[in-house]
Amino acid sequence: MSEVNYILHLNAVLRMFAKDDRITSSHRSLYLAFFELWNQKHFPQTFMVNSKQVMELAKIRSRTTYLKLLQDLKTWEYLQYHSSHNSNLGSIIEMFRFDITVVQKMNKGCSISEQVVVQKLVTINKHKNKHIINSFKQTCPKNEQVVLAYFKAEKRSSLEAKKFFNFYESIGWKLNGRNSIIDWKACARNWMLKAEEIKNNQKFSEPSHNRDNLRTNRNKNYGEPL
Image (cartoon, rainbow, N blue to C red; front, side, top):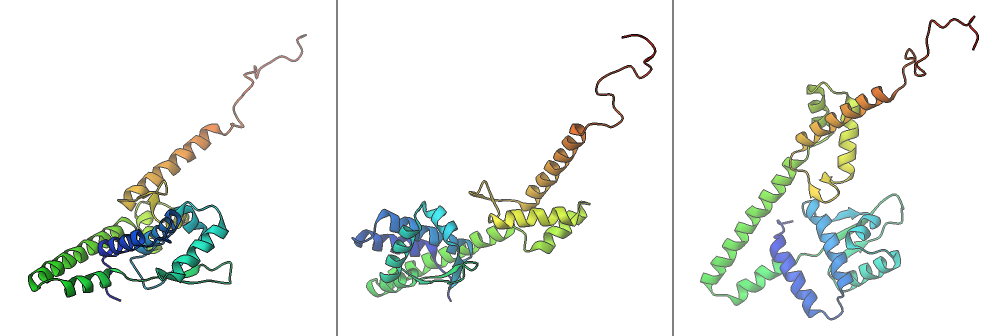
C-alpha cells in the first residue's frame, strides 16, 4: 500500500461530501472520527476500532444512530466495515483511498508542465507526512521495555514504570485526552515527582503511634483527685 497523502485525501472526501446530498453533518463527524484513528495508526490498510471510542470522538450518543450512519458510509462506498461478533474484539475498518484518484484525475486533465507541479506537491506532502509520523514516534516510547529501562536508570521500580506505560498507552499518549505528548521522558519525570509528592503526603497524614495526639501529661499522678 502506497503512502496516504492525507491532504489530498481529505480535500477529495470533503468535495465528495459537498456534492452528495445524502451526507449529513453526522455522517461527516463519524467519517472524520474514523480518519483521526486511521491517522493515529499511520494509515494501515485495515485497522480495528472500538465503537465506544468512535462514538465519543464523533459526539454520537446513540448506538443505533452510530450503526445506521456506519452502514450508510459503507453502502455509499466511503469505507468498508467488517463487524465483529465477539464483544471483546473491535470491528475492522478499511478506509477507501481518494488521494490516488485525485492525482490520477489531475494528471489526465493537466498539461505536462502542470503535471510536474502536481507531482512536486505530492512529493512535498509525502515528506510532510513522514515528518509528522516520525515526530509522533519520537513523542512516545517505542515499547514498554524502553520505559522500563528509563525508569531503572532513574532508580525507580519496574512496577511504577509499568503503571506509567499502561496508563498513557491506554489514552494514546495524550494529555487531557487531546494534546499529544511532546516529550514522554519529561512526562515520566513529572510522573515520578507526583508519585514522590503523594508518598510524602501519605507519610505526613499517617498518625504516629508514638505521638501524644491528646497532649496529656505522661507523668500524671493518678493518686491526685480530679
